[in-house]
View 1 (cartoon, rainbow, N blue to C red):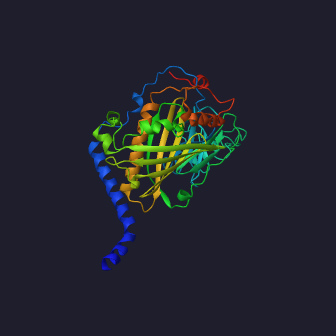
View 2: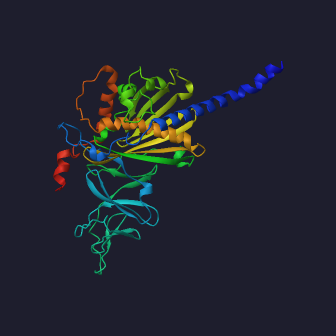
View 3: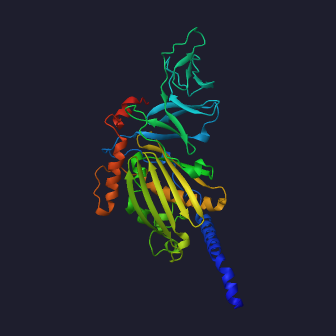
Amino acid sequence: MEVSNRVSELLPLVPLILIDYGVLLTLVLVVVWLLCSHKGSSSRKSDKVRLKRPKTDMPPPFPNGWIPILGSSELGIEQVKPLDVMGEHLVAFRTADGKAHVTDAYCPHLGANLGVKGRVVGNCIECPFHGWRYDATDGACVHVPYSEKAPSFVRLRTWQTTEYLGLIFVWYHSESTPPSWDLPDVSEISSGAFVQRDRRSHIVRCHTQEIAENGPDVGHFNYLHKPNAVLSTGTFSKHMDEASWWSKLSQHRWQTSWSSKGHLAVVTIRMQMSLLGHWPKLFHTETEALQTGPALVIVKEKTTTGTCILIQSLTPLAPLKVKMMHTIFTPRWMPKLIWWYYFSATISMIERDVDVWNEKIFAKNPPLVKEEKSIAEYRKWYSQFYSETSRTIEDVREKTLEW
């Protein structure tokens, strides 16, 4: 009877013990990762990527929609920053009230670049050449230091701007139409329950559309991402053989589905991770990746140690050149070791994709098997972010002068 009572007292503690066990196993994997990682084995620098590729027919390089151009933390109060994005030369600046603004870079007076030695004065951006000032809201010239009257008909182009998820977005459309959809609220972040922990960025040499195409590409998950995440990008391909010791240590198994509605698309992912041939439920995760428009993916991953939110933002800098950023948000209570491991493992997996993206060509009409129908559905969905006037790569080249 006493033994039975003792067992009854311990039963409520079993879930806690299992969670602690999961944390312990996570710590073990972290140690293994640190031991197997070595300098120089991570992703290669962007300047070493092969830039010359066979010419292929591909979509316009810059899709329409809300495009992230800069991290909020990269733009301080009254700071001015030049930007080369979407084939445009822009300038971002933050006025004293904390609001971020984006305009064309070149002064309509005599063409000076406002992003180089320009400064913020009140609610204006001031040209470094002659001191002309332009209102941040509508771009009208409001001050010329050597003239009694400012020519208000002279206007600097302004871009509709919003800050969201620690990023500065502009609305880009080849036909200059106003926004047709809004960015969704992420209540965990907007309420302050989740906080930003870390951010990593990569320069990727491929078409913007191809990066988010990873979600509906169900076939690549169980091949490219089967080997365990603790392998560095420089060594994982050596251990894809199921007979290898590294493969037996840990593998990943994926189940995915893709669907879309309007400007939104959703990928649901169920991931299982093995340990020495066993598939403990402690290592199962449930993920929902919400793609919002052409350049933003909001990933919510539920694990036994808590929920993490990963924000993937894509900034088209030039044709076949994209700045990809990943920002992680977690609950305030989550220990650093937990979110650091999850984030680092995720980045390790993503860098495998980066290796492929940096060297591939765009296949306009790929021969797909029936299990890959979601790729065709995705491409049809993504086509809504192009219009008849969207610039081609040739258009961008003609607009740019380079020596």
